[in-house]
Length: 560
Ligand code: TEU
Ligand code: CA
Image (tube, rainbow, N blue to C red; front, side, top):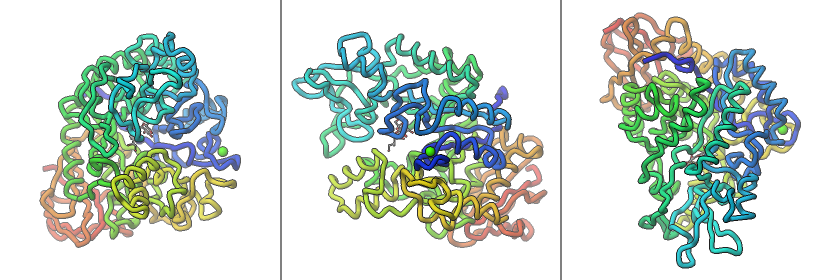
């Protein structure tokens, strides 16, 4: 496998709106990000992914872009963005941006022009279709609820949107549209951007017949995902995109791709794949409900372990996945993947160790490094997220009580990840001197950066050690390119694997169970690299390693 500049990097996702506000308007900004670059450097971060910072009406928090060439006023100016790029470069860090090109905002001038003349040239940048017997052209449900088709006032024409109606889908079959997008992407890369996280990209290929599917919900509609799953040819579009843009700049690209079939992996992330990498969502999709959040199955440890192991084994044959615990669309990992007895600093360190030492490119989501958890939500009014509101509605329609639906949203809401970053124990967790746009998680008094800086044993200081270990001269090679080999899969509650190459054999072992567990080591311990015990020791007698509940160890073993 040829080496690439990004193979051994550690990435961090910033959700700008919630990171740090410096002018008191309650909204995080570019100045805030610039002022925390040293904090990120100290954590060992090489690549920073910024969720969208483009001009937007923020119907879907910036994932509805009104101008791809402008910075949202709420966040700052293009000069500040250039400063951020330069300051990151000084620190040998890379910036990647979110690339949202399946759709744009209905306020984008292309769409405004299309609406003004639904038979004109700009209409062909989107999907405008005639209705079918007074109904929308097909029976698809959008990801945020309701039909995928929105009627153009005063005509028997509809436009297509897979997300909110304010996010019309772009017509990728139109070469002119593609050229416009490529021009824009290259413009950013010319500026010095190192790459992109590419939003919802698997949705760009449509079945132009828009066939109906069997309804799958109380609303009588069928998920538009069915069309995405059944249509072929996205690969050609993705190749054209790559060849016209990323490839020329050796850019790092991470695709947001769901439900990848294993036999498609080489096409997507092989040496000449469409993307550098794609996210591994295999643990996250385990709790996808059939009809939404309300019927989400409970997470089972054994299934979680099996899903990650399977993804690792499949992926290493072809390339790398980007490993995450959480992101801005998911509840906090500490609340989701850890049983309640493990939602402690030790449990959080254990989960982080597994995620960061898997084979792949680790992404840390803001606040994960201090162990931020889901917030307690007292009423639906406290939420902002468009998807959460839809899911509440769906749950109520399915017969859940108001209280039950609120609980569902509290557990699964995207806003759990979007509450402001907790910097201090002071007012608003140090996020803003004004009124935060979304409430601060009341846990901030206990969980914040300032307090954790003082405590050598904090989650933050542990994360620093963990990232440093992954990138250390001694272990960088094995953690980057070493094989992943699962072990002790038959031991209840234990998640363990080797990272192995010719010269090193590292065992990472964690006990997620509530009881102690014992495993038999296959060879002698050469060195204890890391443990989440305060004194950094391990409890090992001969070849029997005892793991307390929530203990994790990273051991170098004699090669076997
Ligand atoms: O998400 C795409 C996506 O399909 C899901 O993550 C979806 O948004 C979620 O399950 C709904 O609850 C991307 C972005 O990450 C997300 O923030 C945007 O809302 C979405 O695209 C539209 O741009
Ligand atoms: Ca601000």
